[in-house]
Image (tube, rainbow, N blue to C red; front, side, top):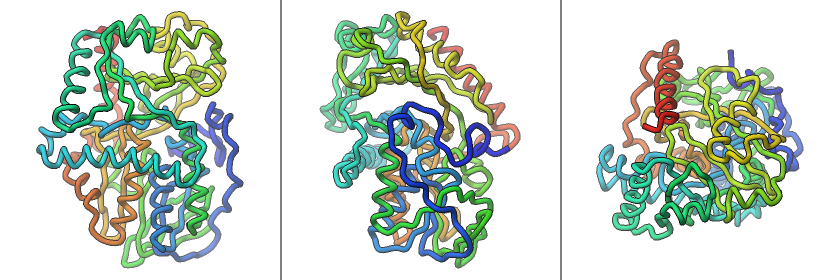
Length: 434
């Protein structure tokens, strides 16, 4: 079974609020016959689109192949949160890779936010970019951890755009009875992810990249010239960039061993009217400190967009609204029965270290994936770093290579059930509040 085709209609965007509030691009023609390129990019999400754009701007001849539509996967379905730093916190990174490299990774995280903001401005991408992400806690120990971390960022990294909020201050921002404090990071942001993806695709084509949709890559043959095969054609390229993330499948075993696809779910309620003020009093996004993170924000048409719940198989559940309504009702009991107008699932990818896996898997084949829920900034930056690495040394690419990435235990057969057991344990701890 292939995750690319397990849950969605071929060549069609899911019936999400994002798709309903976006005008799609005219379809790009599937690849037919043989073509040649300097670089072939496999995958039309943030990583692939960013790589294609930056390569084209470097003067490279680049072909991008996507099995469905550009922005079809996690890039067009996610919570739209552009977070600071990395998915792994800086205290952990300092222990993992040392203070100097941790500082470099922090700087790369800040560069990623600036890159996204810069691309939106440069290419006039209308994606409702707004400042602010709050981190919420439901337990006193988590409040302390969030406040200590904010202080650490201020003192060690000179990051002054984050502040601590006590119970009263947090409830003034987010009137949820579940949350008792947290932080507010006004250097982070939120946006409409599908609009961003389509804007990057338009920019890449204007720069000269050739995009082919409905072109499922099923075979890659390494060599001095790499051959990338689809059902109806093939590309012969000097370099290949693998940008499939959770949908990469078996195209490269080294990546597959270290990057695990998981599924996450999002709903959009009906417009809330006056009830919106009982969700958020500022136009910021929120993510909480649970191991299985809940994340939410208000949309420009006044809906609650709420993400929560994970599964680890190939199939999405039959009742996504019921799955997501459970955590949503804990956070906002007054919305327990609110009508849900849109519900969708998406496949992302994680690594054991919760850091992106950037690798040169062959001398002329590069890969980036495993953003672990931090992909808006990471993935777009990774595309740029991969583009740089096709031309020569890239400091950013090398920095991510210092993060140790061990394979998931259990190999291809047992890794999913092992992960499911581990994640179920943490989810139970969330429910018990321990």
